[in-house]
Image 1 (cartoon, rainbow over the protein chains, first blue to last red):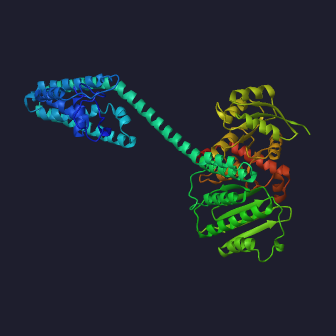
Image 2: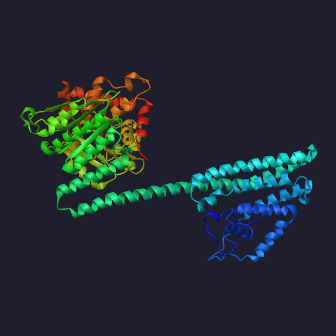
Length: 398
Length: 212
């Protein structure tokens, strides 16, 4: 019979000369070689050879001729084993078709020839599904592969059914049909017996390969990330080893970045409040070297009012970092059905609100003024020695 | 003051010795363990007051230790200590039976306080854990199955909010005009709800927060 399976899709664009591949051949690699030359699936050619052989022995002659005139592909090392299972399957198929032909006189051009041809093509396509796993390794794009596999299975099954019905219609006689049906059942049963363990192992192999590929992709992504961020930071830390503040800042910002990567849902910091609050806190933390702990409850889309709230919150964080002297600033943002509240709190030295000079714009303008202009409110609670807490509230738009 | 006997369970040796060095004089470290097996064995042998439990460890992690130790009827109290901020880990280990969850960035003094609090049977919530709980109990569309367990009272919500805002128990007590003991009672009650509530939203919520 015919050589094996499709190396074709990945093979070099054009063979300068037709050769008979060794790997994946079923008999001598003729069909596979020709398929590569014609850029077809080898199965198509195998099918053609089988059918031509059934019809009047022409396939056999053509195959033999091509075998003689085509050089074998050179291989280094051991020759891969022949696909005996495939060979057996094609053999059984040929036997089935030939028997049909003999039974109905179709091989000499009788009335039953076309149904047999159609049925044969369908059966071959179906059979060819037995080896998608092997193709998988050579072809990328697993998802697409699966869908085309299903389409082809469907077409194959349809062709078989059409062939069988056509056969019954053409022969017209129930008695003959029964013989044919029994025969078909035997053949299909035999094919299934050959294919079943194979199919099972293929499914297993497919799954294993897919898992392996996903794992490799993940590993590559992690490696890339570690390289871009962690290794880079470690280098910077070594270079700045004398500067304790800078080392702490680098370590902290790397930790935050890694945490976000590992644990935070991927959010768009330009679109949702929680992500935006985290980003603002991260930026101020980097700028001032003071740790800012953020806790967010709930989330919502940003709008104009909430952007103003964010600006005010940023100003509150800046104040806390710069003037409170506290090592940690706590930020808490909560989204409720009708309003959004952000608390910025430190346990630093605090101050007396009325003592803040009128020209200091931070609290009066950037925080309180901004919130009021945008329909929200701000409340500052502070006492010398007792830290500061800024509470910002903004109504959510209906 | 009575010293609290503590067992440190963590697979990083450096971290174990770091914690040992940081803990205050009222804490006595009686042993260390580095994986699930040795932890279960050490807890049975040493009977510590509090186990400082790492969440991620070879052999099933902190949750496996909780399952095996608490499953055998032990009354040992656990305080989970982890670098992870993942909601799934936090909620998972609390529902597994830990009485508190703090991250490894916690200062030595705060950790000492947390251990003492857990040894006295109270709960320890970090601001982040409080945020998670508020989030999990807020995201309710379906009516609670068991109203007593499945929802937080207004007072509990207020306490959790203040924890999330970075308030210490003492500050919360002052803010709400209640005693520290009452604050502790509220937090313990939230812990109980967190552990016993059958709301499947809790786990679903935690899983949904996970990232791939």
